[in-house]
Every structure is written in structure tokens, then in C-alpha cells.
Image 1: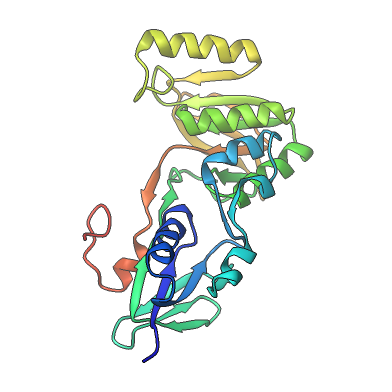
Image 2: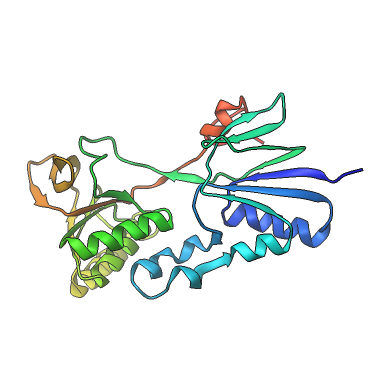
Amino acid sequence: MGRERLVLVGNGMAGVRTLEELLALAPDLYEITVFGAEPHGNYNRILLSPVLAGEKRLEEIMLNDEAWYAERGITLHKGREVTEIDRARRVVRAADGTEAPYDRLLLATGSVPFVIPVPGNDLEGVVTFRDIGDVERMIAAAGEGRHAVVIGGGLLGLEAAHGLLRRGMDVTVVHLLDRLMEKQLDATAAGMLKKALEERGLKFLMEHETEAILGERRVEGVRFANGLEIPADLVVMAVGIRPNIELARRAGLHCERGVVV
């Protein structure tokens, strides 16, 4: 009798860690196929900020390179986003038509960054900060432009701002509330953090609501609800994430804030 076919959708840290545990417990139990939307193996997403700042390279944050999959007999479909689950036939299908049958299906699709719904949010030069592709776009923009605007004064936004500052950009952090990292810090600590970051060269616009991102084809500036406009060659959205449940929802799985298990 042949091995059961296990398909993992989502080639990130959580999904691949699950595979590592399964292989440690029963290395010959499954014939494994992995689909990942990114054109890489599995890397440490937590260390994207040092890559942006020029302190590390992608190779240094890779957790499972392509050789790791090959050595364990795992079929890796990198750069192929699964767009359909045929539950009746027990088959997953990627955007490029690649299919894989399964006996067991593991969904580890993670989350997607929230993009604020304002005019111009689809202009070239408007990015999120979620994967290595975003980092590569920010690094390229830092080599071509001068002014960066980071929307979001939480931890992720401040890490993006620090990295872009290290890349030589003039960086303004825009935050809707009156203090940075309001979920982690009280007013006194947030004020101390802001002062320290200003001394390093970051600029801040607190209690500013983004009204529109300006430009024709590429971003040129940002306008706020109070009428203020500032120049921007790059806009980074760092205003939170949402569970990536669209694939599960289309497949008919019960979803609320996330997939209900």
C-alpha cells in the first residue's frame, strides 16, 4: 500500500515547522508536496528588518533551502499560489494550472497585510512590509528616491522606518494616534521612544489621517485629512494584518475571523 499524500499550502515558518515535526515522528508516513506563493524556500520572516537595514542577506535568514526539500523527497512548487481546492476530487490547483492530489491537506496560509482604502493605494511605489519581495522593492526604491513615508507607528512600521533610514532615505512616520506603539507602551515610554528615534533622524506626524496617496503612475506624495501634503518616493503601509482565509472560504470551509477548527 502506498503512502498517503500530504499537501501543504503555505511554505512559511508555521507550515514547514509542522512538516519538520511530522518527519521526526514518522519520516516515511507521507508523500509530501508543498506549494508556496513566493519564489524561495522557507525563511525567517522575523528577520526581514535586518535584511532591509542591510545587516543581513536573504541567504542568512533562510531556514529551509531547496536542498532541504529535495533531501527529504518533498516536492516543492515555489512561486505557485494555490487558488482552488476541489474538495470533491481532493485536488488543489495553483494559478498556473499545477495540480496535486491529496489524502491530507494542511492549510498554513498565514496572514495578509492590511492596505488602507484610500485613493492612490495601488500606485507604483506603495508597498507593504510582509515578505522578501516587499523588502526588495523598498531597497530598490531607496536607491532611486529620497523621501519615504511609513504609515503606521507600531513595531513593524518603526522597523521599516529604521531600515529605510539606514538605506539613506529621509523618513517620515505617520501615525493615526497620539503615541507610538500604543498597544505596548504607555504615554511616558512612547514619548521617550519617539524622542530617541527623532535623535536618530526619523520624523513623525502624529494624529494624522491619510486621505490620499498622490501621483499619476508612481507615488509622488501623501495628503492628509487636515490638508497637509508631503513628498514621497516610497510609501510603506504598516497598519496591521488580517488572516489569509480567502482560499479556505472559497473552498466552503467555515470561516469567521479565521478558519474555524
